[in-house]
Image (cartoon, rainbow, N blue to C red; front, side, top):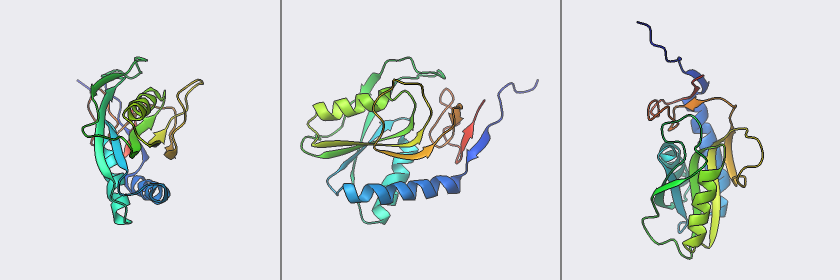
Length: 177
């Protein structure tokens, strides 16, 4: 019996991802310091956040690291339109600049909720950064401060992006449609 799942089509190769991450690090480093908290949105943003914080370290910026575990998709291919908060910040962020990191910006709900949580936690400034921004009809949450890649309006997998929890570990970003 043939596998009914579509074959992933590479849209952005691993080397291109590395180049984009290095460019983002160069743009972010001047507006952050070593007291800035890089807060990844789990689970999808983990791959990007790990690469970006290492890229920042290579150019002399060693941010603190934290995470928020938010979900709006579950195992579905579309957002439910609501955000579940599974885990808040692990350490105090009051008086610190917070850089929120996520894999993809589509509805913007997760990024907006994370920014709200950071502001309510007393962050002195909240910056947002996403690896990819997908086209989305207006209205949506405020645009991120930093965007690495303008993604097509396709279902993306790889580099942390998933299909019901699968295919996150692909080294490239692929379309699965």
